[in-house]
Amino acid sequence: MNVRTGRGSRPLEERVTTLLFLLLPMAVYAVFCILPSLEAIYYSFFEYDGFSNDATFVGLKNYINLFTKETNFSTAMQNTVIYTIIVVIVQNVISLFLAVLIYKKSRANNFYRLMFYLPVIFSAVTIGFIWSFIYDPNIGALNTVLGMLGLDKLQHIWLSEKYVSIIAIAAVHVWWGVGSGLILYIAGLQGTPQELLESASLDGCNKWQQFWKITFPTLLPVIGIVVILTTIGSFRTFELVYVMTGGGADNSSTVLALLSYKEAFMYSNVGYSSAIAVVLLAIVGAISVVQQKVFNKERT
Amino acid sequence: MKTRSTRSQRIAALKHGFLILSMLVMFYPIFMVIINSFKTESQLYASVLGLPPEWQFSNYLTAIRDGNLLHAMLVSIFITAVAVLLMTLLGSFAAFALTRRIGRVKKWLYWLFVGGIMIPYQVGLLQLYNIVYDMGLINSLWGLVLIYIAWGLPFTVYVMYGFFSTIPKEMEEAAKIDGCSTFGLYLHVVMPLSASVVSATVIYNLVWVWNDMLYPMIFIDSAARKPLSTALLAFKGQFLSRYTIMFAGVVIASLPIVIVYLLLQKRFVEGMMVGSLKG
Image 1: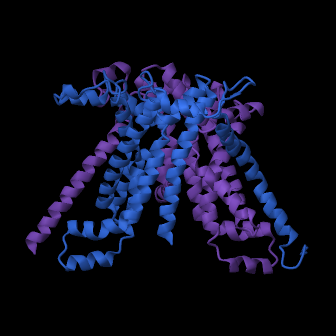
Image 2 (image 1 turned 120 degrees about the vertical axis):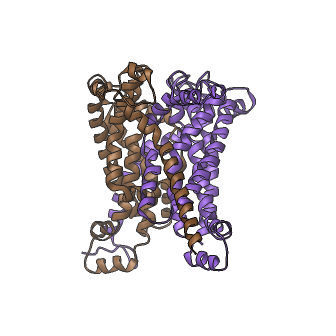
Image 3 (image 1 turned 30 degrees about the horizontal axis):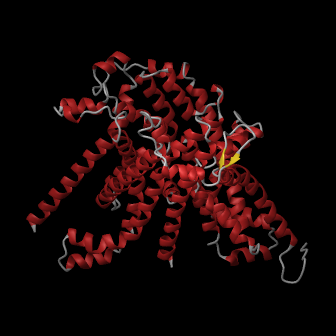
């Protein structure tokens, strides 16, 4: 039976079903994701300990403190930027290089892909454990190997020294993430027009020229997307740092997401923590918007 | 001609040599964990890089008995299965509803859902804690499941909506003429066509929920309800610097997902590829 509410309008049945379909997901999403995120923005203008009922409105004070006072925030920001730059550059260069070597479909290449991708599926906790051991100053594999090679000067207390620790963790992130860039680059490379490459090779172009003149330009949009994705991914890094150093020693390896977590759950500075989170959200949001713009331009 | 082919053979040999070498470097940390999980503590200190003199399983027994890892694995399986199932169901509901003609709110609703993709998990974490606390869902696996659903929906809806809106309208019209209800359209037309996109979101969300440590760390205190990720974290405190036992724990915790990966290989990588586009 078709109950119509008017000419040209949809049957009541469709309206009701659509509404019912939206109701439950919307409710869960609103309560557990949208509401707390909006509250975080709200509380970033307050001084609040998270438990009592008195939150004092302080305007932009939390934000001003972030950028004017010499606090952990500047260390966290600096570390996050160093971390992101290392991960984005090193990971993408390695992923792209490996992808160029193994993008063609063959048994051997499938196997390589399977193996290079393997680290991606491990959790931050397990990756953190494994590498904490490799970096262990006394019995860790890294210092052991450096000692065996007579490179004692390069040995470090990897996860305790300032600057060294954040770079060491970024290196782990690279190892962890090479596979995810790799498969995207492989997909991109498999899309390069083979006829172009063949005619170029008939014209006497060598492999190197073929890569820079044909493959690389057609791959540029893919590179752009993967670079932006790795930027976002490493900017919001949290778990690896939490597991490997906890942000120590003395907050020297802390990053934005970790600092925001600590300020809220350990030091009860909820307003301040929320302000950090909002800054993080703003940066990630801005990068996402740029990505959408670039991505959509590609599609049209 | 002959010199040319030997030259290209040499290049191919060089290439594979390089690839095998870098594969070994990539794989070494995992290999190291496996071999060291079979050593005793003193054997580990005697030689970090070598194979164990005799392979023994006592670390695994300790990890399972004292660390209660098998129990944690059951908890992980429960959380992951329920959360991913409901996430997929609710995500497909919302995505399907958004493809209906629902007027001007449609665009707003879509962006409201999809905008969630870019919110880092740490934003509003304490506020989320207070909400969950007020609902009495701290230490509840169902509370955890609800949180996963909420934070998994944006990506799931985004991917599914993208696919659903490519399904030709003529198919829907035909089904309607045959007397199909809107729910029937979802169940008999849209979902059967969407197996590949559903499997992609399932795999991506599955890896995320299985591996996640952040939410259990904050919302689950009781040792008996900890999933593998935070059970392993607790391990670190319990067996402070007893690496061999921790390695056994790492192997046990990673085994299920590695098995899934090796079984599904191609589908797995495709799913993760769709997922990684989320950022």
